[in-house]
Image (cartoon, rainbow, N blue to C red; front, side, top):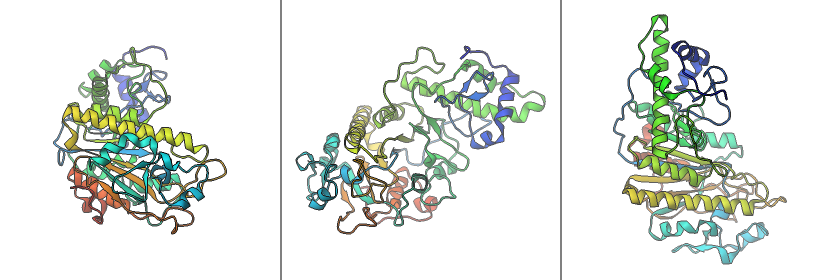
Length: 425
């Protein structure tokens, strides 16, 4: 990197021209590297806000309900069976090395056919307090073992030609604050609408401007039109202005630097606990955040699963517990619903590499003070679908509950409702 520099108006307009109509249609601009005079997006992980372009200053419009929704994505396909180990002996027969030792399984009050993985001990107070629902056997009736197809089906509510099911809600709302819908950890197509992509933050310490003084972007975004550049400049001002606002507000909330000075070292890989900690900061701030997707990879456990899965589950459970502790302190717990998703479960029988391959029926958690706590759904090791847990709960049950929570019309957004389970009080 050659140091920061001022971006002049010609470079500002040129940036938009070179980025092209595709980027403008996508609705945003990433924070920039200065290797090409501030025109190329940094490919090393620095990510800016992908937000809808506008020619008017962004304003925060009241949400549908004032409630907040957090979706946790366990990317890769979480092993539902070891997350919720059954008491049936066949489980241990099919997993002679991977089955959770019976003495370590955490008992769940009122449930006699399954318990929790010991790494999820931080979740037992939620169960005991009636603030946690478990959806076992969730998945589409005609499962697909492809990551890409299965994730797309979850994100798009099984309509592969449609935007994300939360993005469809954003498309219907007036323009919101740049951090209203934020993805932490990786991209979140579930938030992408036809015209309203979300803000994507791959890492708190890298969500910043690279090689450009942010003050110059803000100044140019506010500048008047000049000559033939007026129409494009107006679009670029909207995109740059919202991106600059997102970066500045995120830096203020998280205590990082928007221009790269004295950034704190980031230790270890991205985790769900890291993302949930940032999500709690955003929700407790006044930047208008209402929808958050937190994601982390690593759940594709084809080999050496036992230790890896234990670490991943502990990260999730500890992150959820710390998240709600922060919300309790901020007085926001009643306003927040948190759900977990994963594209599919794993096969019931372990493989020769100490892991499990792609399966079908999975598991989702739902947390919140308004949750109808308890165990929902079932699975049977005596009635498998080609060696997989048979899907028992349609994901539309979860989608419907989430949309009801934020006050959206689930039938209008999804094309249909599924009220077969009562997840909310």
